[in-house]
Image 1 (cartoon, rainbow, N blue to C red):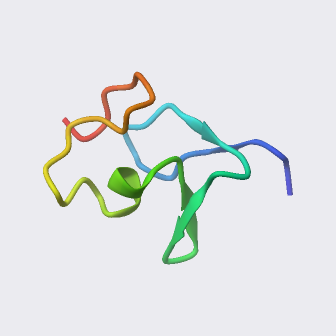
Image 2: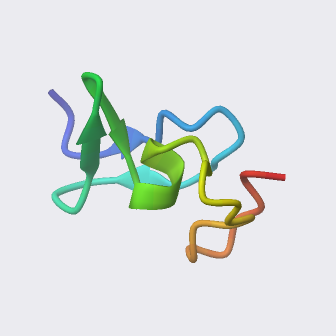
Length: 52
């Protein structure tokens, strides 16, 4: 496995490493992405515009 992986959130452009959040076997850059932005958050805090 590579030490750098793209976040599994379809609209996210972030890469994840050791800080990845695992959810249903996928790796995400943050909890908001891992839950599909279910809490209404529009971005993951990594300067990208996923969740819109």
